[in-house]
Amino acid sequence: MIKVTNLTKEFQSGDNKVEAVRKVNFTLPEGGFCAVLGKSGSGKSTLLSLLGALDKPTTGNIEVGDVDITGLPDSKLINYRRDKIGFVFQNYNLIPNLTALENVALPMEFAGIKKSKRLQRGTQLLEEVGITTDKHNRKPTRLSGGEQQRVAIARALANHPKLILADEPTGNLDSKTGQIIINLLRNLAKLEKTTVIAVTHDPGIARQAKIILNLQDGRLVER
Image (cartoon, rainbow, N blue to C red):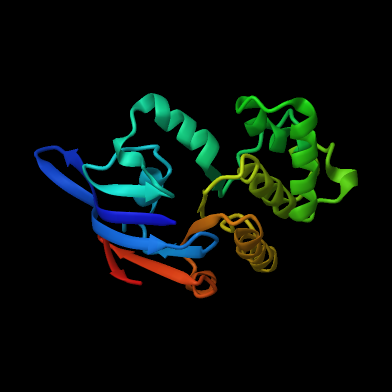
């Protein structure tokens, strides 16, 4: 379960304080699929950074499972990002000189998992996201955009994260492929028992989520 309480993030802009996120509250169940909707500048990316422990809130709390991450020291936040969070980006962010399987296995290598286990888990995940065996040893440039995003999703799932944060995961894909990726995220949330939060500007995609968080000027105006 993800629980966010009175979450606020302020930035200093000259002599003024800007509240990018303002007293946001919500709870998400394990295995749920949530969309964050809002215009540019509404606070979507800031919220994602806070949930992923890439930034710290000014006030408020974020609980992931039974851990309040806002109270963790930097040393433990590194482990939290590695073990509990999976990131999916609009531009895929795959390492170009690694194969699809090597990209998926990399987070497990950082976590100290043995090579045989890494390859086994990586192969399983690539199959789950629909990457056929003949493409496991291809590098990203030999994969389509949709296939690269599937590999990125498999990589995000590598260390059994509690939470996947997807920032415009369909932004560089055509509408048909984008729909496939959204369906994949929804199904994997249930299969892997992972909560998925996807930022999108597309209301059509957002409506397919079980929960929609609509941000406006940093405030949660609708759920």
